Image 1 (cartoon, rainbow, N blue to C red):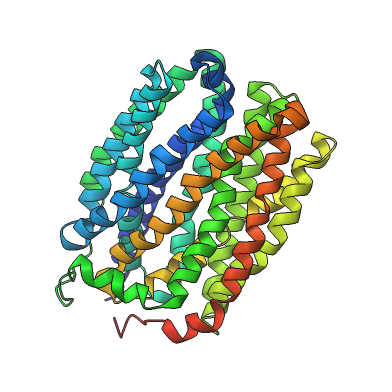
Image 2: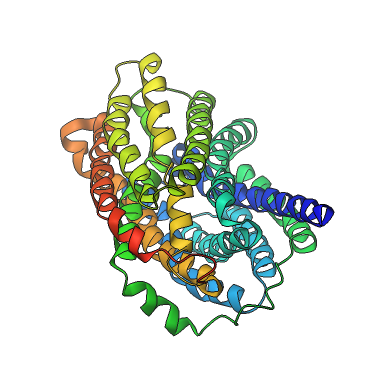
Length: 419
């Protein structure tokens, strides 16, 4: 019996590791656009508003909307196969971004990346929930969520070095080919958990109405959306703030961003998962309280870091919010899994991601880019810095919405036994 348990833990660890690698590529392919902003804007003759559009809506609309049917397909067929196919698809379109010769070509290719990535995240959440029991689930989801800071930092550093050594186009080619090579490994190694004792996934029309009747779902979704609006926007535009306001070159921007995102992000994600498992076992409300506290600290420290008079002060100030702004991933993703019975989890996750990414990813980069263009007459080269600072106010809104979830989450929690 012990041998079987050990084998299951080993299998779960291997699956989690591969899902993490896929998630790293997911975010790497998103963030690489941010570090290459200067080169792409100059080469394709784009405005900040146009680049903001490339970084948000084309990806976000398809990524958010198609996430639900892909997740439903994963719930009814094979979660692992859907994930492997998604990796291959988004990686192919990442590579195609390197051949873009105009705004509209890059726009279409970014839409392709969004279509592919729509099939990766929600099925991964559900697969991890299948492999890990409730007392270890938030930590497992937090480890998976390390893909966010690792992918963001690697995308920044590798993109900068490849673009400096060759070109921005070569950076897209490299990342695309690497992802395509990963896809067959995912297909061979990652397997679904057998679920013979569970009913088949209910029709998709039953899942969202169940969520929609729970106010806590809407509050959590819009709280995360407010945070992501700022998080995605800053991820895309902070490298350009470092270029325009702090006068850093391409490699220096990559090193600066890579270090604060990796060190801060990994610390925050792991801390969020560990604290959620420990405190959430005592009170389900902590799954909401933890992100709220983190966001209240994130807003002023992000603004202070962006407005710092020197890099020596900016680095430690930006390290703090880069840890706290994504601490929510483990706690909130775990909570969403427990708003519905087990067979509905991938679809429920996709419903949550629909709102989170449509608002956060769809609006954030475009909003900062638009504000930057609007403020250029008054602030000149510093316009982007002030646009980024203004965006940090959304973290306060996120915290207030999440605090409203605390008592509601306790009442809405669906245990595995009940599921």
